[in-house]
Image 1 (tube, rainbow, N blue to C red):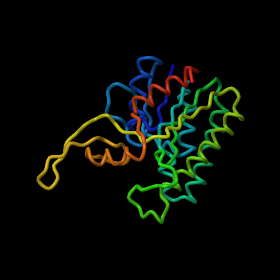
Image 2: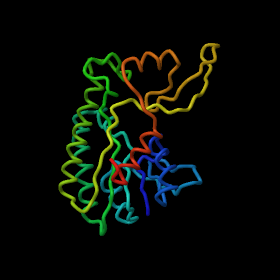
Image 3: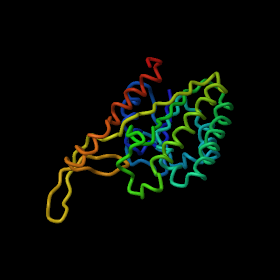
Length: 227
């Protein structure tokens, strides 16, 4: 079995690849930058370019396609353009999967867009709250899910699924850094950067969290039809 991991350079993609390579078969990491890992074959490609990724998929004929790219975050940076890009991406995906000569499993790792915070958002991603950065991200998240529903109804010979964590994703790696003469112990918060103990305690008093490894295990369960 050949497994494509789009966004294979990210924390969720890497965690899934580690499990899938042992339990499913050949793992191919696809990302803008080739991985320097010797464990997996790596391909450099723009995974959000429908024509480029479509040609690659048709050429390689993977059995499983994992999309571990946080598309809602990327597309929400310019919301109006992002909606169009999301729709075009999924239309391109439909065209590609409909041309595959075999059954394919496509699993997308989604997001709620606010890390489960809800409407009373005390944090943003560093932008002015008046710009509604998290709500644009949540809106793009909804567009993604709607498009996947359409794909699943339009491609009866393909398994189309989504995992949508309602929690923030923190890596379990603990690291250290020097700041103004102080040595800080930090936890890797993925796309949101690193957190001190007190910062993490404050954040998790508002919302829950999960890990890439837990997401990866649940992705395996979805592919196996267990959930």
